[in-house]
Amino acid sequence: MLIFLALLYFCLACSLIWLACFPSGRASVLQFLGGLQRRLQLRAGSWRADPRAGGSRLRDAGPGLRWRWSLRWQALHAWLRRRRAFVAVGLPLVLVPPLVALLLRRPDMLPGYEPIDMVVDAQVAALLKGEQLVPPAALPPVAFSTREVELVRPMLVDASRNWGLLHPDFSQRLLLAFRIMKEKHGYEMALLEGYRSPARQDLLAKMGSAVTNARAFQSWHQYGLAADCAFLRDGKLVISEKDPWAMRGYQLYGEVAESLGLTWGGRWAMMDLGHAELRMRGVMRR
Image 1 (spheres, one colour):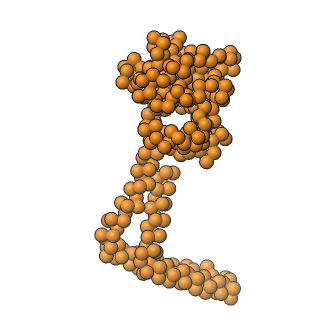
Image 2: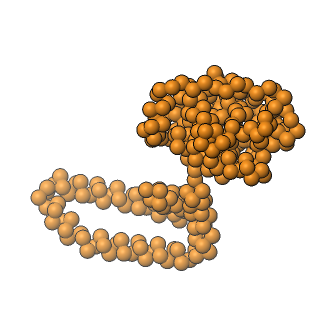
Image 3: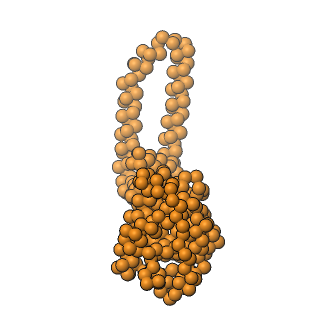
């Protein structure tokens, strides 16, 4: 289907370029439409005059019609040969961009993309419907303003870590991920930022693509369906990906998050290893 759409785009683009740049193209199209109209009028008149003879006349016109189409194909072939240089340059210009877009496409590149509902393991679903997990105790603000944290995540001290502002379904999945990471893998996790206001989202977007590409209401943070997380070691936050212990933790966290039906930022071209989100249908709009 995607290949068909790419070919259709290519054909339409070439046709538009032909009509826009070459008067002969416009003249040919007008001549063809005029001839088609005249033939239809003649045939309609002949059918009205003698309905029984219409079929035999069409059969008799078959060889002549094929001959005319053969002449048109030869004319088109000659036209392409005369404009080899234009075709050689124009063809890649028209064809390469959609092909590159198809090869590099990702669903989350589109703001407002709403994926199909993800299938969650039956045991996990049962656990989510059962016990209501409680958020951990809040860390003191000083934990988010250390020099090590500021180097990796500037402006983090002002971020919201209010679990009550997160969507209940998302917060329960995230808390379950925290529990699995601690009980199964020995990593204690901390919430860096959950809900993010539209104003803060725009402020972060102005800091450049190294921080975020999403503007206000283009991020699941604005809907309480995304969170950035990191690890606690000896009472201190460890965010840096240069730490092998933390890097291993991010890989495990990605596996756990995806097993719970969450989308993990570590799969993106601009990786956000501590990010996880729950994409819900009908929530994000363009």
